[in-house]
Amino acid sequence: MAYGASLPGAFHIAGVYVGRILEGEKAAELPVQQSTKVQFSVNLKTAKALNITIPFSLLGRADEVIE
Image 1 (cartoon, rainbow, N blue to C red):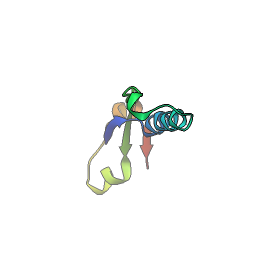
Image 2 (cartoon, rainbow, N blue to C red; image 1 turned 135 degrees about the horizontal axis):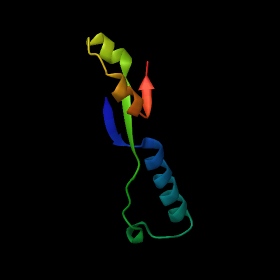
Image 3 (cartoon, helix red, strand yellow; image 1 turned 90 degrees about the vertical axis):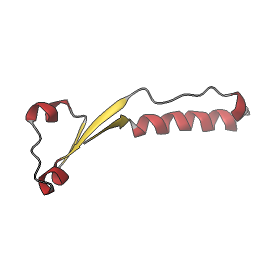
Image 4 (cartoon, one colour; image 1 turned 30 degrees about the vertical axis):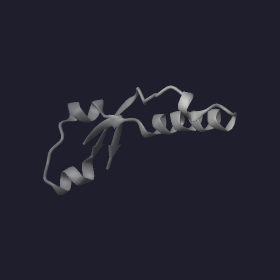
């Protein structure tokens, strides 16, 4: 299981920064931002290999389930 910042969201923010820099803004003057969307992922293949049972209630809350 993993719970953390959404990588696509972080990549989007990075792309926006690159675009602003390429348009002439100074990197030092850009505000600091971080991803506000978090993602919960469950890897069932690894859980099975470790003989761990993941409850269905937890699987229902996951944003991504890897089988």
